[in-house]
Amino acid sequence: MQLHRWVLRAATTVLLGLVVPAQAAGTLDKIKASKTIALGYRESSVPFSYTGDDNQPWGYSVDLCTRVAAAIVKQLDLDELQLQWVPVTPETRIAKLKSGAIDLECGSTTSTLARMEEVDFSLLTYIDGGAYLSRRAAGIRRFEDLADKRIAVATGTTSERTIAAALLQYKVAAELVKVSDHSQGIAAMLQGKVEAYASDRSLLIGLVLDSGSQNDWSIGPETFSYEPYALMMRRNDAAFRLAVNRELARLSRSREMHAIHDRWFGMLGKPGLRLESLYFLNGLPE
Image 1 (cartoon, one colour):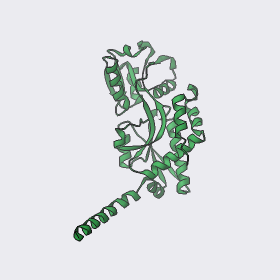
Image 2 (cartoon, rainbow, N blue to C red):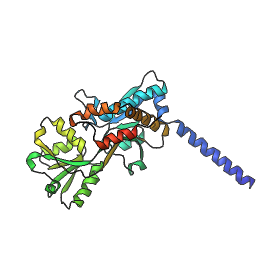
Image 3 (tube, rainbow, N blue to C red):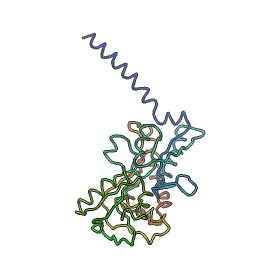
């Protein structure tokens, strides 16, 4: 019995020796040592995360990550912090997080239970829903008009699954065409390769506003999914997740979140009831 206890104690000591260094090498330690935070962003997810005319990242989620980075500077008492912006796609964003190529993803990513098996998420930052975009000349006014049409959808997005489910629900037979991102989806419509593009409604609105020819496009009236956005990070890093959430909660409590919303969505009016409720609930006390 004494030998058994000694072996168990020794094994536990070895395991703890292995675990402690892994925990010590958390994201905040990495940031403090390198004075750099690697932020993933999307190149065409207007108005959440995109490359501007100056070739710099812009958008709602980019602003949130910039605020988080500033809060981390104060928390770690750094004299400087370099923001390294790394472009990601729906297919590469999780892999780049897990590999350490980015520390935080600042895009238009839906927080899902399936993704939580691989990564962690911050407090929710936005609420959206699935919709579809078409050229006005195509005459697509409702979901049933998508019958026998070709619909582009970005690989690696929740829209890839939810548009397929909606087609089954509405009993509409259509062909899904996989594309790499939003810009490729728009290009496919302009080239006549597809008749519609499925994504989240706010992203589609951003694409229309950014097109310079708003009257040429039509967004369907139906919303066929629930898309709660959040900032994405590596799993099992409670200290870093707390740092991110602490700043998001502060922004909500102080109503600075509303100013950030108005900067990017002001043309659409004030936050709706669902989003207003989200901002209120996110204002966690210290």
